[in-house]
Image (cartoon, rainbow, N blue to C red; front, side):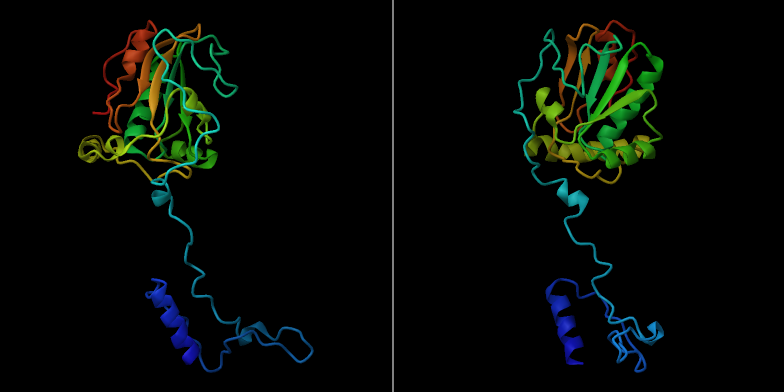
Length: 260
């Protein structure tokens, strides 16, 4: 009786006072019985005292972890590319593109963000309407989290997705960590509500590895590997018009892909 009382006190101090302890009948031992020869007795006599913590998930929840400051990327954050600059090239994201097409590159804020979801859906739609442009999305969530997020949206379609978990590519394109005003401006919450209310885009669970402080961005790069348009997101709810990038590459686009 006293050990059970002590266990309840310990659970209460740990903030787990609502965890109930298993009850055993008098015929059911609270330990695993062993026969005299050292072998386990009949399992029907009791499997031992159940661990009250068995169903408790330890560790920082993903949603909370996304608010923590991430480790720095392996390379310093460079200056933001300007129009007319040669695009930064990496083995994971080469310019000029291997297939010779101009590109629209979207650096996702994080998988699960409703504004990111809206932008990706607009990008996916444009990729069907402009097969002459190579559309690329870059994610810093884990490969599994990115794949699950895409599956929940119905797939990537004609968009190529690059996983940059170390955020090396983000840093190469001048996309570092944002500040409080960028993420927590009251307008962001209001616009997020409008996005869900008007268009049904509420976002989803934060993808593993996702960081809310990571700045997203969009760039248009021509077939020669020259930056023609784009830059970092000015705020979480920045209404980036992807059609402007399409027009900067010399194609016709309709001004419809803003967040609102």
